[in-house]
Amino acid sequence: MSIASPTQSKLGMVFRVTSGNFLEMFDFFLFGFYATYIAKTFFPAENEFASLMLTFGTFGAGFIMRPVGAIVLGAYIDKVGRRLGLITTLVIMGMGTVLIAFVPGYATIGLFAPLLVLIGRLLQGFSAGVELGGVSVYLSEMAPPGQKGYYVSWQSASQQVAIIVAAIIGYVLSLTLAHDVIAAWGWRIPFFIGCMIIPFIFMIRRSLQETDVFLARKHRPSAGEIFGSIVRNWGIVLAGMMLVVMTTVSFYLITVYTPTFGRSVLKLSVTDSLVVTFFVGVSNLFWLPVMGALSDRVGRKPLLLGFTILTILTAYPVMAWLVNVPTFEKMLVAELWLSFLYGSYNGAMVVALTEVMPIDVRTSGFSLAYSLATALFGGFTPAVSTYLIKVTGNNGAPGLWMSFAAVCGLIGTLVLYRSSAVAKREQMSLSA
Image 1: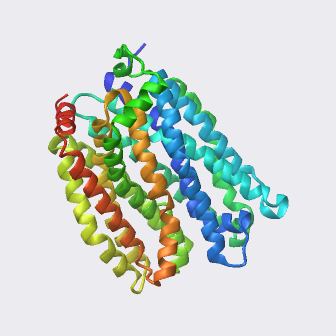
Image 2: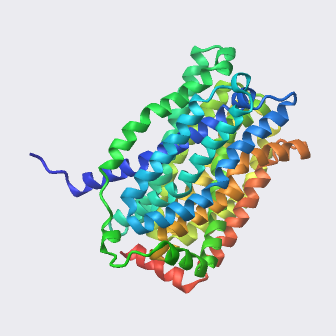
């Protein structure tokens, strides 16, 4: 019998632990891409803008539950272990996915339709509140010495695979089904596919092993102790939240919102928007591990500072250039540039967030910071972008939102790395 090498074993663990991230982003992207169809199915209104805003509001409502999930499930994972916690989050996430996929439309069950969709989104948000943190901490704790940035970057990279797969499915559907058919029921097909892969992901996650770092801890803090530690470290959590704002806003802008932006604002075809989204996913998948590995060599701070400043200087000008006589080629170039900014920043940011959190609240602290940023800023990016365009009459206004997010990231970086304790933890991580 052959024995797997340590490298093969670690790669297998990366695949198993990030599979849930794939499912989460697969469903989140589908909700954003098919927003116009979901709006007509569950939120019919005479005003298309109002209908779309209700849909994006429901999309964003899932993010409001993230901080709750971060605190409740984060404390649970910090107490019982990474493996069992990640299995629990997958079960809750799967329940929300199934609910959204099978709920009849407003014409069939009336107000129960949007209510059940909202409940599905809240379940997904509750689970996702700790999914990213649990996966990131797991990858950080199982990474070989000096490679934490590279390994943790696969948390975000797995989401890009979901974007790519969802874009391919959407592209195939646009070629094989008529627009009216997609609007009536065809948009549900990708959600059904998501439901079908839940049992497979559950099986492979059951084979996860607990991390040695967690097993080595002699004291398992109670929920009260974890909550108390979070309160004492509120400054780090708040600064960590500022760090994440840049990531979560830019990600949802260039992925979830892109298809709707291309179709509704730029008036490009569905196919054009899907192709651009596909290449954005490929670009993100490339830059995330590359920059994660680079952060292992040069440190997190230089990349965080450099790419927040570059985003502040270029995000709006690029969007303004795009919306002035938009074409498929210009949209592709603009989105790939924003993808470069996002992937380069996030490749260093996620591992940085695992390092700045005290070890006893690593999962809950990471998850709370990430969830607050997503709930208050990133999750509402499609709605904010739609609103900004409406009130300003400027189709490039989403670039201002991304620039604002970059300012938040810059402030978070400066505050966190001013702390000698944080700098010391990062240095220990790089040399470990």
